[in-house]
Length: 306
Length: 306
Image (cartoon, rainbow over all chains, first blue to last red; front, side, top):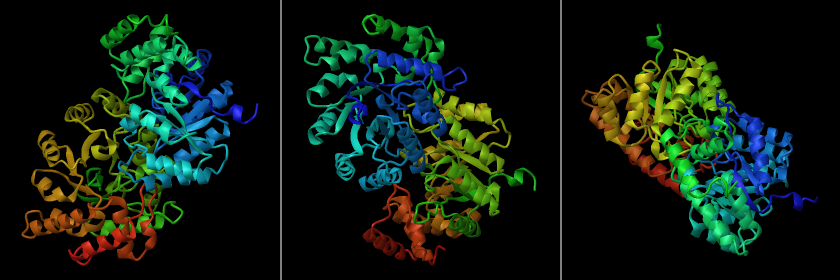
């Protein structure tokens, strides 16, 4: 395999959940099993330590241990997009160097998200220092645009400057704004830039305009049907499958995303530990759990999904 | 001195700036000198590693080194309020244990600020784990309410529950909401709870209703007059001094706070390295710097301030 074949694939990605033991430490074995299951069930790649993975609820050391464990378990490194963006330059550099040393397909980088309303110039300077200090052609950065959570958007002028200054390094984006017009505009205005929709709801739409695919929380549950869309976007079934995954997404979105997904994982697997979350996340309440599982049954989940 | 006398004082606090060398590493010597200067010029205490100190732009290790350096330099520990609140439980515990081991007057704790719209239950669980795992009667937590930056406010019901469950531990708050009604309501509804206004603009007002004082970015420049207000709030001069410090605050607020304060420090001290900031912060532009210093001259700064 050459470098190109070992680069991050297009397609359907799950932003993996991070299973926890009852003491809220990382359950590495369950995480490895889950990642294997995702790749065996249609995922082209996996984000580890994204928003869904509760990344910022872990220390730098824990985050490195998670990646070490997955690599040790022979999860293919080039299919991993590792979340490495922190608030500080030293933390982001430490995590990113570590991820690049494992030959991951790419790193998913939040902007520094504590201060709000920072200038494009300041955000550019942040990325420039990181790229220059890492100074490695294997570094492939995907920008993580998730303003509802980070509070710090990537403007198109900033993306323009980053991709112009570092064309071999800043090569893609996960757009979790929820704003289809932004995703469309990114695909149109930045040819060759790999745009992943932050939800599978726009999978067919973004493939139709040259996007790279989707990276989503809910594909932890719907990767199998979502992958059918990616594998045959012009086939007869694509539209009806898209409606099915949208239905699942709409149900999950009625609840807090991370505990809802973990509840469903617990129900489907029979492993109650799956419900563990780190505060400030909280487990789904009993009544919500019951309602959620009933809602999902109404769309024939899990039978028609997993 | 007994424990009581070694507890965090009331009064005027500066949220200290963090001086950086040209390579953006911490300038410990300049920081120590600045903290000594603040205490010699009216500050009753100092916040180290708050928002103004660019706390979240440093690694956990760097943040501990900063506190180590101040203690080593014999800055009185009980006058220090150390910012220790991170997004993750392990980071917050590590920083907090370290600060408590130095016998600081207290720790200033941001809520976990990555996820937004978390429930009071989830935020309470976060603080509960931290308090229980540290398990030390010397731990004195001041909540850091700064919703314009953190995006995660402390509701009064959450404060009620935290102060009820941990009355010896959760003992105060820095209210940087900018919302006087909130500060007033905290003083009225939580007797004995130490409320510091996040700006000296409300120093006289909050002292009048039983507040503990103020903790502010701009008192890096105006601690001398601000301390006169605290020392004689019912004196003839209090109102006119309050107007003077308000005038300084209003001028600084027209610019990005951290680079503006650092620019003024550089101009007053003749030490140009003071202007260094870590991205995403950016230095003040030349034209803004000139304008800012002119504006300050119009209120007789620095002569009537420092």
